[in-house]
Structures are given as structure tokens and as C-alpha cells.
Image 1 (cartoon, helix red, strand yellow):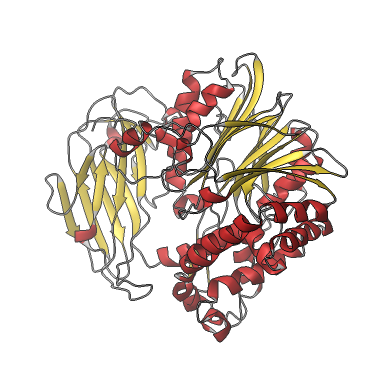
Image 2 (cartoon, helix red, strand yellow; image 1 turned 180 degrees about the vertical axis):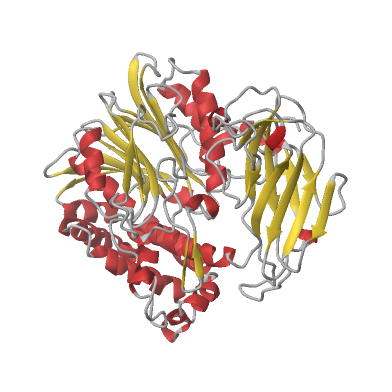
Amino acid sequence: MKTPRPLTLMLAVSLGACAPATPPPTRELIDVKGSAYERGLSHGTQLRSKIHSFYTTLLTNALFPYLSREQPDIASFLPVYAGERFQNGQFAYQLLLDSAHAIEKSLPRAVHEELQGVADGSGLSYDEVLVLNTFVDTVMAVRGVALAIRLTRAPQVESIEFVGVDHDGVDNDGDGVVDQPGEGTFSPWVPALAGQLVEVPTTTTIRMVLTDADGVDPASLRVSLGDSLFTQGSDGLTITSLSATRLEVVLATPLDAASIDTLVISAGDLALRQQPPPVHESFMRTEELVFTTSGAGLAPRDVLRPALNDGRTRPPGFAVGVRRSATQGAAAFLATDFALLDANTSHKHTAIVRHQPDSGPAFATVGWAGMVIGLSGMNANGVAYACSPSDTLDNSVVGSVFAQVADLTTATLTAKGTPIGFAGRKVLETATDTASAVAVMKSLKHVYGWACTIEDAAGGLAAVETDSDIFNDGSGGVFPYAPEDRDATGHTYSSVGADDLITGSSFTKNVPDSPTLMIAGQRLVPQRSWSGFFFRSRRVMDAVARKLTAQYGSVTADSLQTLLSDPEVVDHSDSMNEVVFDLGRREIRAAMGTEPTSDSPFEITPVSP
């Protein structure tokens, strides 16, 4: 198979779209001063109508119905959610409100006062403002639980075998041993961060075994290799039932030499489920395996995933910090493309809120009307952060189930700890450099999994991955690393040179984030074995690595804007903002207010008025 071209037709068409000549009216910039309550009151008053609109259109009309679709699966595991309080469309709101009240206990008094100010200024209730500012981490955690439950009912890849590579005279898995028994066989199947096999002979046959308690539906099977799709009846694809629960799939097709290929597998089961409607099969997470063929000349860790020409893959959020030798003039920049949930409304309510508190540095958050948090921001000390969600079952909601496992009839999904937006706020309010910002992150208990990049104007640069440490592994749920740090194999975690860091919506250091175990009949597995973000995140991080390598030593704020708007890395339905923090100049360059955000012009905003 040929390495697919990096752009899909859909994205290429989008690249040709013209950006508006003037900033969209959906973008707001407000300044707030004084005490926490006064700043909240000013925020609520200035954006009153947009706060009401945002709450109604995103939460009431979009998120609550979406989350309510998970109620049947969750209630099958935790019966309390079949109770009267969660009926009649109240499931999502009540669940989020319960978690909001639990999270509230971890927030400083000043945050309570600021939230009250937003409520008083906007006319929303305090509880509504609290939910608006805490729902992101809670929804991600609950969604993770629901997805994990659902995936236990879907087909699983039992094994993948590249037949014959264990005697081809090559070290295909990069472990320093040639042709050891089982080389080229992944049983059990566990995805890798980079390439899983290299220098595979072009005549290799690929054998896969899928399993499901209800049987695997051969008519639903999809196997892709490069730009070729194989289904039941396709030449080169043989499907054999090994038993009522196991299906063998053999792909025999010539491979092109010296290529990087992505094997993609998906299938549904034979059971038809009624809830949530419509009637449906249970589909597995689409699995991917990246490998090279003879002549590519790459080690597994050097393999960068190619783009997929599938017309549906959406890049998740990412961030890239650059400094010193990576940039023109040894400048320091932090760039982020945040993508999660637009629902045809988030882009209409974007806001940069600049704070001038009574004490401490001025700072600005990039976010949305009514939210005192941002998923990125910068302070007048020249410290900036940017975070993307990173799925994990090591989260506080799962921890709440652990605490109640003796009696699941009354157990609830309740988030606890500090949401990442409030962790970022504390960084902005207190940090003088990257080291002190990392110390802030270490001091907190985190609600969910996030991958953050932090940088200061002097070039201090670090990544911080978080989870809730419900398994008490000694990490405290915080996993920092710097460009120079290396993993057990001697490779840098996510840098292409000495002066950059790339983070995405997947873990790079905290890879064994969760053990594999059963709890009350439900299987818990590490992120890379279940998250829908994992493969898409690895792909977008590799795309950024390719583009960054091409301009290393000459990176500017303008070139980062171009990178953020490249169609290969833009989610065209759920992008939420693109931001370049110019740390030396204390300037925020933000594109937001349209969907996709790449259709918006970048505007420059000083962190202080």
C-alpha cells in the first residue's frame, strides 16, 4: 500500500475557503477588575445575554440530551440512575449538579465569590453557573465510564499476526533481537505510541482474530490498508468463523516497498440493542496498527503516522511549545488548537477575559461567556498553559464507584477534585515561571485526565499529564516531563529537537494510566486500549512533528498560526479556538468565533490592557 497523501478531499476544499475580512461578532474581549466578586459581577453583566444563550444552547439543548443517551448503559451498572430523580429529562443536569457540588468543596473561597458575581451579573442561578464552570471534566469522566461499559459489549481484537516475520532475518520490533519466537504477533493486542513493526516483507499476510460473546458480524467488518478498503467478499480478504464467538480475518495483498502503512480494523457484533435508539449493533473502537515495509529504513520509534484518507477522521486538540534553537531570534511561543465540542454553538460565545485582580499578576483566559476558566491562558509574568483532554479510567468518577463498590445499588458517579480550568486559573494567579506552574499542578488533586503544556518567557518548558491517582500508584496523579527527559527506551517523550514539546489528547509519559482489572463485572483498561482519542491524537501529534521539523530553527508566531490552521490538524466540526501565546511580548494571538476556527482571522490581544 502506498503511504496516503496527507490531506483528504474534504480538508483540501476547506483550505480554499476564504477567512472573513473582519473579526466575527461572536468573539468577545472583556476586562474585569477588582476583587473576585467584582470581576465575576463585571463578567456576568458585560456578557449577560451571551451567558444565557451559551447555557441554553450548549447545555440545555445539546449536552444534556447527548449525555442522557448514556443513561441506559449507566443505569444497567448503577441502578440509582434509573430512579425518579433522574427521569423526565433530568438525568444529565442532576448528575452534573451532584458532581458540581462535590467539586465546589475543593475550590477556594475566591472562586465561589467570582462564580456568585457571574450569577448576580448574568441572572443565572449560582448552581447553573457552577455547572457551567465544572461540566467539562465531569462530562469527560462520565462519558469515559459509559464508553468503557459499551465497549465491553462490542467485538475485541484478540490478536494480530504478520505471518512469517519471525524468520525474515530482520529485527522487526526494534527490541535488538532478530527473529525471536512470536515476533510480528500481537497477542493480546495492545496499541503502541509509534510504529509497531518495521521492515515487513512486501509479501506478508496479516491474520487477525476478533472475538465477541454475541459473535462478530462479518458483514460489518471493515479493514483498511493505506487507501484500500476491504470488506466481506473483497479480493484478498478471507473471513472464517473459528467458533460462535471468534472470527478469523486474513488479509493477503501485495505491499509496496519502503512505505509506511496503517492497518485499520472495525466491526460490530451480532446482537441488536434497543437502547439508546435506533436499534443498533455494538461497534468496537476502530483499531490501528502502523508499520513499515522493507526499505523504509526506520526504527519503530521513528515512524510517524501518515494521515488517513478516510474522510471522517477528526483531529483532536494539541499544543506545541517552542523556544531557543527552535525559533527565530530564540523567542518563546506556546501554540494550541483546542477541539472538543462545538454543537453549532460554542463558537458563537467565545471570549477572552482579561483580569486585573486586587493582588497578583494580571492574566487572561481564552474561553467562553460565563466561564471563569479557560483551557488555555497567560499571565503578565509571561507564563502560559494550554491543555487538552486525555481519556483515562483513572479518574475521580471511577474512584467514586470504587468507594461504593460494596453496594452498587446506591453508588453514584460523582466527580471530585480540581477541574483543569481551575488548576489553570491558579497557575495564572500565582506562577512566576514554568517550575512554579508545575508545582501548582502537583499540589492539586485532579478530576480527570489532561495533557498540558506550560511555558514561560525565559524558555522554561514542560508538559504535565494528569489523572486522579485512584489506584494510589505514588504519582499523585501528575506526570511532568521536559524536552530533555527520556523514556525507558532512551527516546525523548514528545520532542523533535532540544527546544520543543508536543502534547495531544493522549498520554505520552503516563502510558500505563490504569491497570487492567474487573470491577463489578466491568473491565478497566489503560487509555490506549479504549479511548477514541488515542489513535487520532497520535496521528495529529505526528503531523505536528513533521511540520515542526520542516521549520525548526525559524519558527515564528506567524508560522505557528499557519501550522494551527493546516487542514491536516483542524477538526472541522468541533474546533473551538486556535491560540498562539507570544510569551516575550505578552501577547495572545487568537482565532475563534467561527466553525471551524481556521476560518477566523487571528487577532492580537495584549495580556494586560
